[in-house]
Length: 157
Image (cartoon, rainbow, N blue to C red; front, top):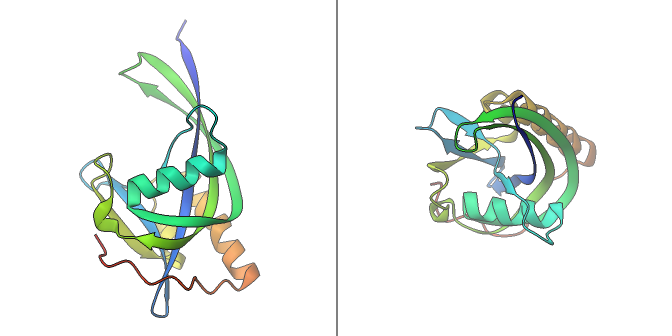
C-alpha cells in the first residue's frame, strides 16, 4: 500500500497598484514554465494567515496585509523525495501590498512576475490556483477595491 502524508500550507494572492494598474504577484518555478501563487508549509504554532503573509514575503520579496480569506484547495501529488503520496490542503488569503521589492525573493523561486489581475487566472498553471484567483477577482469586483496607499515596489523582478 502506498504511504500518504498529509500537509497543511497557506498562501497569498498579493495585490499591488502601480499607476492605474491593479496587479498580482505570481512566482515562476521550474525554468519559468510554471506560474503559481506563493505558498508554503505552516510552521508549529502559526495560524494560516500568518503563514500566508510569511510565505508570500519570502517567495515574492513583498510584504502585505490580509484583506480577506479566499479559499482552501486540496490536491494530491507524488513526492519522490518522500517516497509517498502527499495530500495537501492550502488556505489562501487575499493580501494588499505594503512594502518590499520582487528583486528580494528567496531562492525557492526563480522569479516574480507582476500580472494584471484580470489576466492572472489564465496565466496560472494549476486549476486550483486559477479557482483561487477567480475568487480574488470576484472579491475585488464586489468591493470595488482600488489598491493600497503604499508606494510601488522599486523593481519588477
